[in-house]
Image (cartoon, rainbow, N blue to C red; front, side):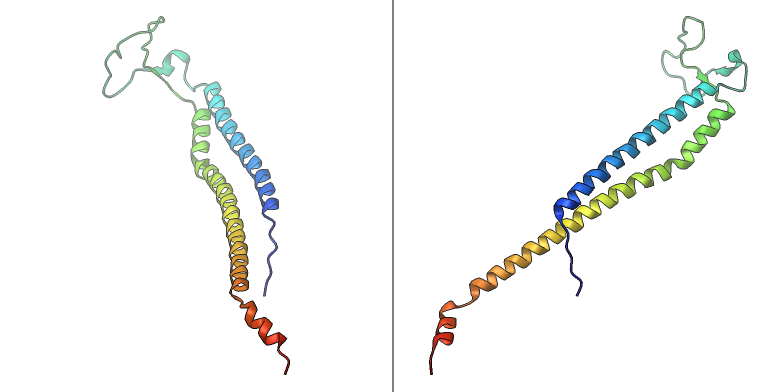
Length: 150
């Protein structure tokens, strides 16, 4: 029969370490996405500046005819260049991978917590059963049986 020797305090300490690393991973992924956005904006476009502004298409909201100080429409959209498109594509394709990393970290931590709690509950139940069995013993009968002389 296999025996287990889990120390809940040790598990708790390790989960704190893992939690800190998981937070670091989350921060790194957030920084990565922010840096990708900045890089995409800094990359510019493949068309000269004045041609990069296009008027909005489709239904136009109220007030969309307003113009900024330069005379350009306030709701204009800037075209993206090939570098920005590539960075956007990269982020889109990696989105599921990033989510999977976070999900796996969370599942591992929650699994360790659940397993440790079940272990502790099992220990408590075993102790409770032993105490109940000890209470159920009739001491008087044992004294009488062991103390009789024939």
